[in-house]
Image 1 (cartoon, rainbow, N blue to C red):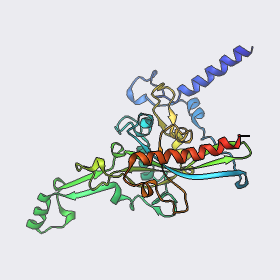
Image 2: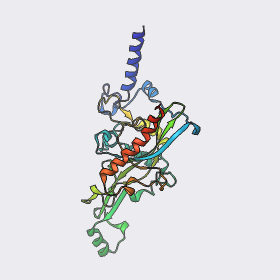
Image 3: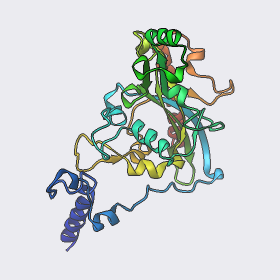
Image 4: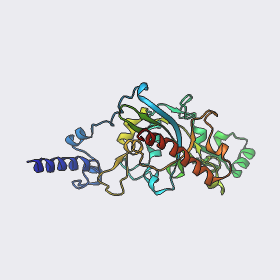
Length: 302
């Protein structure tokens, strides 16, 4: 009986997971029917992200705020970057596309200028960093010859460039490492994330790849967990079971290096006191990681 109930449970979980793939793809008669879910499937999909457990301030025995840089060239971070093609459907989107679309439709109402979440920004405030509009030399000549303003120039003389998913080369992640004395465990809570890309005004220049990426905006993760839960990243091992971005980020299924920790020097970055030496900066990042990790190890040393 135990074996039979175990099999039934496994089949039920498998059936639930498979519904997160392209719904109705095997039963569709026309392409428009792909993605249409039955009422039963919609009820199963009506779930929420796993709630954070309450952690009292007195339960935190140790904490350290860190900022990490997640470089998207690394294979472990590909699920955050791909797909860069925006025409693959609603179930195949990159993290940046999810953030940008929800900002445009108003689902993400608050974005911030810095990682301390003190200055709010609107999509209109971010236009200068997300979009570049440039008038060509021929357009300037047209303006001078015809005596017209910038609003009256034909579109053929205007170059417009938007930051797209393919332009994002890294993410900056702010999180808190803390030791929960009730559970006797070191944990990590992600607080904010920012997509970073070269300056939109120079993104197509030859030296743009070597320029330092600029964080375009910060979002407070607890505010958008429902959105990240609904959006799925691609699972390379099993496309029938995609992983939500909320799960991916909270379970730390990415690789990053610490570029800043909270410190007495105004939270200065590693590159400010280890200058012009990339190897030593990485070693300093590892030292900060070891310092946090060793605290938990020392708790169990007798």
